[in-house]
Image 1 (cartoon, rainbow, N blue to C red):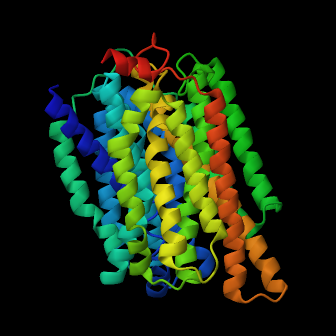
Image 2 (image 1 turned 135 degrees about the vertical axis):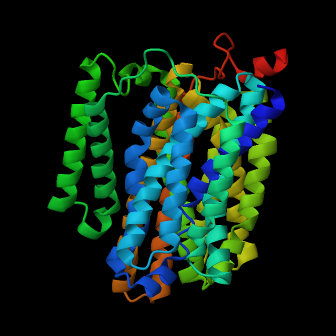
Length: 480
């Protein structure tokens, strides 16, 4: 493919994945309006988010493997179609039940798109310098999509209605489908790779879905309840059965040797910790702005504009240059440390804090940190993988982020609720109690980001993607 064609394909892939990433956060600002219109109970309202997370997290590994077996382009196009049709169903849903079903189908389509988009980008860009730049674009989509989702959700809900947070996907999905058919290269499936480990697929999908279900319901049911412990135990048993099968079957769904690759394994740990901190920021900061500072939906969306701008600049113009100059470790550690500082600023903000003095500094620090860090994390995760297994590796990467985000958010919400109840019992007002709980959660998110920086800085191998003989990306940059 020509340079122009490859970059056009990248933009199409990023737009498709952005549509998917947006839906993990765009709905949060609109939840009160959805509850009023469709008559959700407080407990059932969580399923507008959880139904999406459940199917999305459960189908990532399967979708990634299908991309390797059937062709990444084919799976990508199928995912876009499913997601777009489900978005229509969500936007026009006349009842709570149909909205939840539509969100579940959205999750399945979203998993297909996300699991293979990274694999397609890896195949398009083999030169280290170009790949670092391309991954900067993709890194902004994955890290900045949540912030853009909060912004877009606030604007659409504030100016129109909650229906448009779903219907806006329709023209985007149609455009991505037509553009992808022309821009993406034809599938190049490895000969003989036509068998799918169906029992393994069933085991790992069930394990992930049961685990996500246990995590997202842990706060309501209680983390030590028989229901939560039983579900988590079932998830562990299913996962263990999956590992045993993959070790014995001739053509496994997930070759276990993949996890023997150091950068792959370490990047999964970094991804879990980092996504826990990021989910804390997207969800809890929107809650802080609305329920502590009294912002309406539109104001919450606008509050995220500086973050989106700064993150876009750092992802697209700064991150790739830092990777080529210093390798993957220093930019990743610096970015995660700045993100931790941004969460710490939120944790220290008073309940009557102003936007410029207390909210904006945190937003800027988080934007810089996420914009710098995500690119090297993705490069590390995909760097040691053979091309014919890049779809699977992409699914593994996305699964670690998804599971880390779901678990991290559940744990941080539990910490926040515990502190809030304690403060309320001691006589604090409702706003003061909520603020105190959110402070503790933000602090815990900052610790998670710092741990991610420490693990990555200490254990990741600095060799760049696509150049097995080089010691650092700086050496590759010198050659170029």
